[in-house]
Image 1: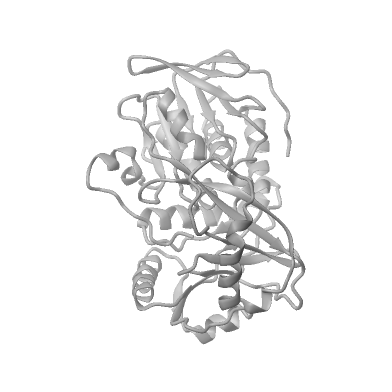
Image 2 (image 1 turned 30 degrees about the vertical axis):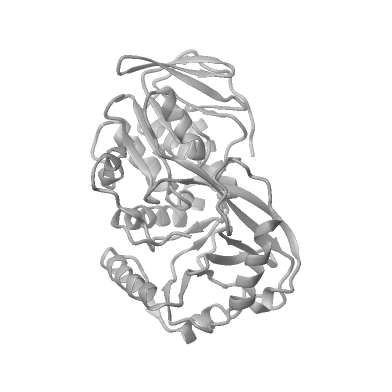
Length: 388
């Protein structure tokens, strides 16, 4: 990852805080639309936060219409990414497979599949037998049905960040890495400056793309963003004998166990028994017994495969597991794209264009008004059900 530090400018039309996929996608699309003084500040290297620690899944199979639309639009972009950005992202469209072992989940996913199909997403309910043919490693004991979306899959998050960042710089964006944002100065409802560890930038607009740290960034501007960090762990196995190269991104929905191919082995993840609500990204072996139990039940052929490596990352959770995308009603110069609750990377391409449109005060490519922060002040909370 290019960690080149540019000189911090004294002024900007807009400052983006956060150098993950949301930040660099937004920066690129703003500059491409003619916004001249775009500055992105990232406290570490680009993509080092949640983006680089994501499982890399890309899909449009959600329960919420907005998430379906964002996922589908982004999937279109991922398919064109290498050609348009001259950047390989190691795209594997091997499909997504949700395994369902109770009647309530089958009913819910059947209803979701009908909505997805109506919105042009290739997804359908299949039998346990067909699921086993698609994902040969699984044991289908107890599986009643599955949701299959063949166009979905996974790619490399860091490569997506690199592609957007390179094009953003070429379009005139100043990307400053190794510099932490530390505060925002306001006068009344107006933003005046963004303060950083390397000095201040005079600006009237800020876009918060700070992921799990969004709550603090919002507080600097007097905007309450209900985003909390939740640790999730991932491991990479040693080589799996006779691993099918087209193994789908497979999810045992009731346990949250998921896996997909990663080189000669598998990338495997699952929620922890006891949620760790903090910024702690250290690996904790305490989750391994429950992970092993879930694997023994659903992918017993992998139970004895050794662990090669692993890491922990942070989900940026909201109360309804849906993103916060919009412009503050109280501080109009403050915009936000955060709180994606584990499905942010796959929406990065679409959200970058949405943020461009919101900044330019024009109708966005996808109507995300229902994801505005104000939903938490009323009754329009919209829980996303298809989360992992």
